Amino acid sequence: MHFIRQVFPDKPLLDIADDDIIYQLPYRFPEGAPAFWHHGGRRALGIKHEGRWMAFYHPGDMNDAWKSQGYTDVTSEMREAATSLGVNLVYYAFNHWDDAVTKAKK
Image (cartoon, rainbow, N blue to C red; front, side, top):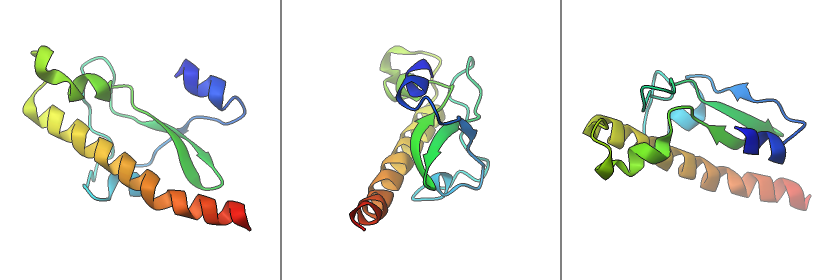
């Protein structure tokens, strides 16, 4: 989280609501971000700029859930949820990138 604050020093970290579009497409997470790890919880935070998410922080360490081959306490459900949420983040970025570029050209 320290790195996010360095990159966006003037922007507050915001709670990402459970009904945010990030949790809707293409995979649905009706209760928001799932918990991936015992140490982190599930409340994701983000930084918005002009109505668009610019940074996403999940305290549950999605990266470890993705590379779970060496981690014995990662369940297949955890791995699938982490992968699906990662897909949602990429989907969001690709689908909102054009909005940002169009706005910048005006």
